[in-house]
Length: 197
Image (cartoon, rainbow, N blue to C red):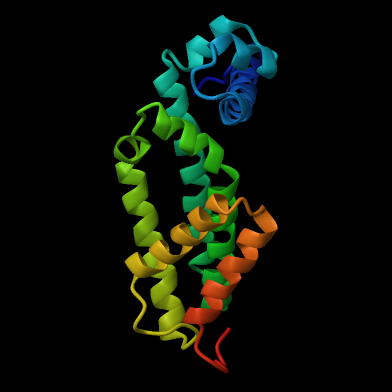
């Protein structure tokens, strides 16, 4: 078994950091300036050369997809962690608040992508299906624990949270207001005086 040379490990670590910087910069630039801005603006904000951006993301569409996929993977990982939490009700409500926070924070970016005709729902369909399944698991655990109404389906739950985020954005409300609104949704599906948490 051979040991990877130190310089190779450093190069790989640099590549990972560059990729993260590019994604962060792209989110910020696309959200504030629209998705039609040249890649040069993303490279400038990330502090890397344009060639570095293209090495990681050969097309702008690849960059868009990577932004969405990175966020979805983070939410999937969180859902996986919450699935083994001691108190299923608390885990579900905590997850829904974070789900809403991220949806609210990326609203401008997703609107810009939609306006440009980019159908990220189709491009990321597999991850979205996986997320729905994981939210369904969190919901089922909370229902079995007696913390959440049993007549609530996963489609209804996702619709309520996503619809709340969209309504908050349409009304020009900030993230704090959106979080309060999602809290009201959570209260609506919570079993009154539930002993389970």
